[in-house]
Length: 92
Image (cartoon, rainbow, N blue to C red; front, side, top):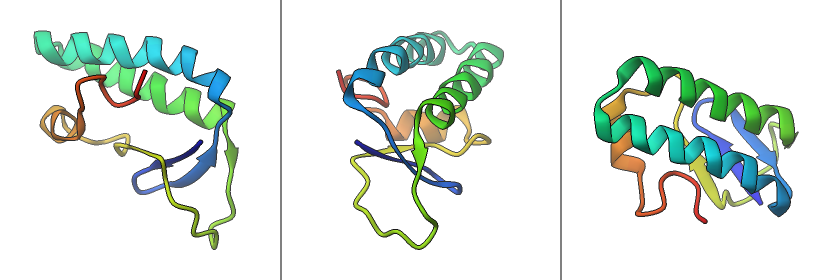
């Protein structure tokens, strides 16, 4: 799966790595629903860090279609809320 972090670039993730990311995505969704801004900030940072840690960066000149787009690290709660689907940011 090709994942884009807005403002940073793309990484390739194996499908079996989505389990860890889905746990963080569930936490992020709960914090957004409760309006927990500090928790939201912490979990968004952890989610993006996990994507960077688990993924293999693609070259900057690569133009692969992204299957998943994640917000920039400084995205607001409202910006992330606009990106959500029923499953959160990460399907599954």
